[in-house]
Length: 261
Image (cartoon, rainbow, N blue to C red; front, side, top):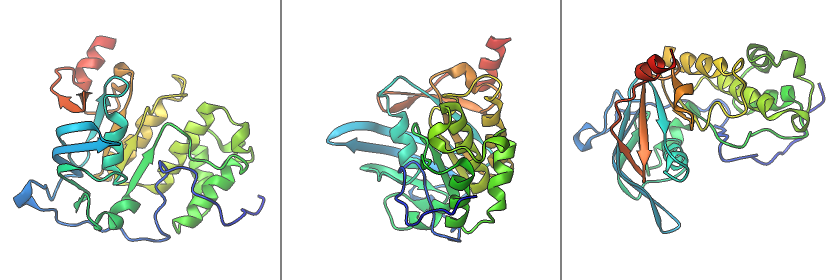
C-alpha cells in the first residue's frame, strides 16, 4: 500500500470527519422545551432559510432509537436541507431541534458529530488514492485500526478492488465504498441522501445491511430516495416532504411492500 500524502483537504462537507478519538457526548436534551432525552433526533417547528429563501417551514419530526425513517419528496422540496440540519451542518432559523441530545445551533453539537454519518450525492473520496487508502486514511483520522478498512471493503464486495484508485471506479463502486466508510464509523445517526443511486438491484441490499447495523445499536437512520418502492424492507415508516413541510402519508413501508408483491 502506497504511503498516504498529508496534509489533505477535506473532500466534501458531506463527509463528517470527527477529531481522532473524539468521545461521543450524549446529553439529556431539554424536555421542558420539547426536546426528547430518548430520541435520536427531534425537530419541533423548525424553520430554515438558505440565501434568504425559506426552505423548511414549521417542520416537526422525531427519529426514535432503533428506527429507520424513509424520506421522499420532489426535487427542491427540502430533503437535502433537512439532512444537513440533522447532520448539524446548518443551524435552524426558527423552532428548535435536538440531535443525539445536543440542541441544534449551540456548541453542544461539536461533541456529538463523531456519532453522525452523512452520505451525500457526491462520493467523498480522494480520487487519486486507492479505495483502501481512502478508508485507511479515514481510520487514522478517527483513531480506528486500519485493518477495519480492509474488512469493510470485503463486506461491500470491494475486497478485490482495494488497490484501485477512486478515479478509476464506477459510480456504483464509489457508493459501495461510502457504505464501507459507514460500517467503519459505526454511527448513532445515519443520514443517506439518495442511498440507492448508482447501486444495481444486486447491490441495493447493502443499504439495508448498513441501516440494520445502526438500528441494532439503538441508533436511528433517515434514508432519502426518489424511488419510494426501493425503501421497502429498509425503513420502518415513510414521510413525505412538500414545500419544506412534512405531510402525513398513509404509505408506510409495510404498505409499499404490499404493493410490490
